[in-house]
Image (tube, rainbow, N blue to C red):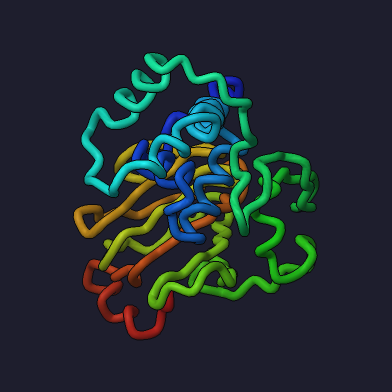
Length: 240
C-alpha cells in the first residue's frame, strides 16, 4: 500500500503522555514508546523539544494535578508569556533513555529497516539474531525487559504480509506503535510512526498490509482477550 512518508505519522501520542515524558514521570515502558514515536514524528519531536526546554522546569514547581484537555496549549501560552530563553535540551534525554535518533539498521528480508535508536538498548540480541517466538499463524513476538511494573508487557511484534491478528479486545490498555510496514483495522490504516491506543472498548482484527510484514512495538498493562466463538476457545493457548 502506497504511503507518502513525507507526511509523517498521522496518529500521535496523547498530549498528556508527552507532558509526562518531558517531566520525567512517565513509566519506563511507555517512555520508550514515546521516544520511539518522537524519532519518527517531527511534530511530536518538536513538542518534546519545547517541553524539554522550558515546560519540565515549570511542571516541577507545581503539585501534580489532573490534566485538562487544553493543558498543553496553556503550558505553551505560559512559556510564551514568560519569554523563556532556556537552551533547548534533547528530546529523550532522560535517565535510562537515549537521545531520540534514527541511525540504526535492522536487516529484514531483501532490504534494511531503520529502527529508532532508543529501542536498541532493549533488544536482547543483535537485531539480525532476534529470538522470535511463534504466537499464532503469521504472528511472532519478543518480550522485551523494560521496567518493573507487575503485569506490564513490552512486546516487539512481527505480522507477516497480508496476515491478520485474531479478532480481539483488551482487558486493559495497549499502546502500540508501527516501526515498519503497516496494518489496517476497523479504525483505519497505520504506517511507520503511527500510534494506536486500545482499551476494552476496542474490538478489532489488525491485518498487515499486503506489501510487506508489519513490525510494531507494544506496551500492554493487561492481556488481550480473543473474541468470537473460535477465539474464545483459543484464549487459554494464545499468550499475548
